[in-house]
Length: 51
Image 1 (cartoon, helix red, strand yellow):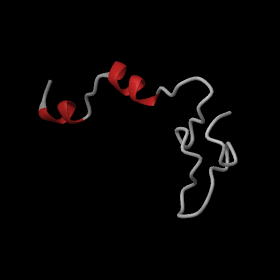
Image 2 (tube, rainbow, N blue to C red):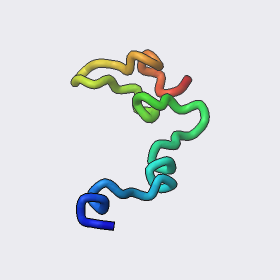
Image 3 (cartoon, one colour):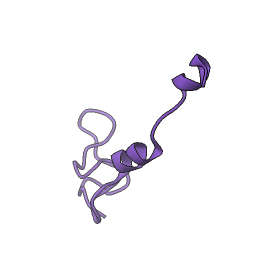
Image 4 (cartoon, helix red, strand yellow):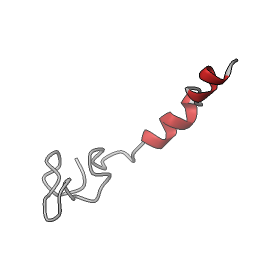
């Protein structure tokens, strides 16, 4: 492996575990109910934090 390959290598199992969210919890806001901007609510769960 040369240096160029090393820059793009990652452990896929770690990346997958970072994306996991508890069942029922909104994956877009991770359960917070907050939107992308101050004072906004999540567009997917409508601010509930769960689906």
